[in-house]
Image (cartoon, rainbow, N blue to C red; front, side, top):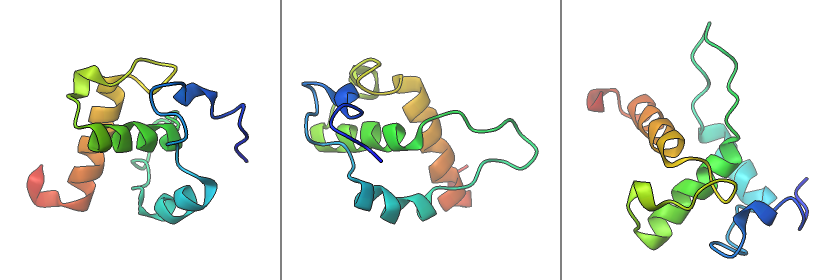
Amino acid sequence: MWTAASRAFVGEVGAGQALSDDQYRLLAPLIPPPKPGGRPRTTDLRQLLDGLFYLVRTGCPWRHLPRPPTFLPWSTVDGNFRTFLAAASPSLR
C-alpha cells in the first residue's frame, strides 16, 4: 500500500498527481503481460503510468520528462508505451 512517504518520488513536479491505489487497480488488468520466456519485468509499472499521465497532462516532449527519481527515464517510459501500443493494436507495428 502506498503512503505519503512512498509517494515522495513525485516531488514538486507532480505533487498529488500520482495514481491512487483504486486507480491503479482499475488499470492493472489492461497492462499487457510480459513476453513469454523473456526476463522477468523489473520496471515499476505504477511509476511508468505516472510518467505517461504526466506527459499527457503537461504536453511536454518525451525528453523533458523529469528525471529519476521523479519518474522513470524517458526512454523507459517511451519504450514501454510503444510496446503497450503495439500489443493493443498489432497493425501499428
